[in-house]
Image (cartoon, rainbow, N blue to C red; front, side, top):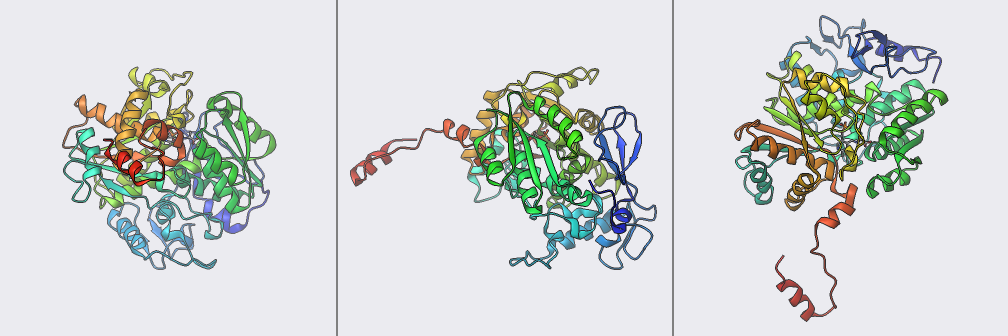
Length: 476
Ligand code: F0G
């Protein structure tokens, strides 16, 4: 890592600190001449804290470091939710750029950097963005799905919900929500002058890291659990040029090893242990609030593995509420696979103990037994009056078939969302008329093997009209 930073970088990042989620110790966001910090001295994980100036964000001021981001003469008091909403709505309203040249700013067009004051203040020239985000929020409830969506309504019927939306994070550039964290993580790698970046992954983080590292011209190294990564994810990772190291072990082994080797070799670690990645993933929360005209839903439901996303979306809602951007905090429901359920088991004991497990599930993306962001996510569940639920592999596959057949489609882990919603509605925890947003985390094509094994309606026939007629007479 660089021993010297440009004064502009030091200035902009001076407002950023890292706070231990366990013992509250505080560290600077960057320390000149020191390796990057991912953990507190007590061993726990860190959370980014931004000391926004008490008077708010003033573009005209030269005293603090958010000014490079802001439109001239913009002056927003921190808790002035109306002005924040106006700012973000103006940026979202700008027409898309069809032809991009190197001089064009992409920041307003990214579903992450549009919210940059609440994500990370860094000089624009360091930002590595595709751009990402801007994913659809599909109305799929029995009431709100509207005309022309008979297929989507099947999802609402299956869930038992009138007002239901699915936000498809599989529509990000590499097909998963990981791009939102990775744009910020790789940007930090640039700021720090890193030569190489690495992660352990069940596949989506590795695909995303490989893509963003390639864009930035950085060396990428990924540690994968051998034999447990879906084909589409592995293909992306290899094709984008990352060095792929398959470990004879599970994700938790890969995670332990990558953390050690990054420290030893000075490689920048880009798992969600890296607090800056979590900041990027917050944008899922901001964007869905904006798509709902800043009216927070009653519930937000998502699949949970390493717990980075639960932590990030929960933090986004907390900040949106604190800054007056939205009027109330949604309740968060994290859904785990029953065979990979350490967070669920801990929740069932009122979080009295942290649990670990030997994970087994068809949803390989969330096959994780020792989640890194446990403490962050626990805070989110507690403060949002949230809930942790588990669903079986059978329930996941049944829900996936409903999402796939509706024409939307997703990878298996994402379907835990719908399986969880259905269970929570059936148990009366989510009410039939609650407004619910579910997150679909990954694209159907990530795991085509599971998708193919679920449907058997593909036939090969002779090239004759007669054979075609016979094939069409078979009822699906
Ligand atoms: N859904 C998908 C498709 C994922 O890839 C992941 C995590 C999750 C849900 C769970 O999110 O870990 O933040 O609780 N995938 C990581 C990876 C572990 O390596 O791609 P989480």
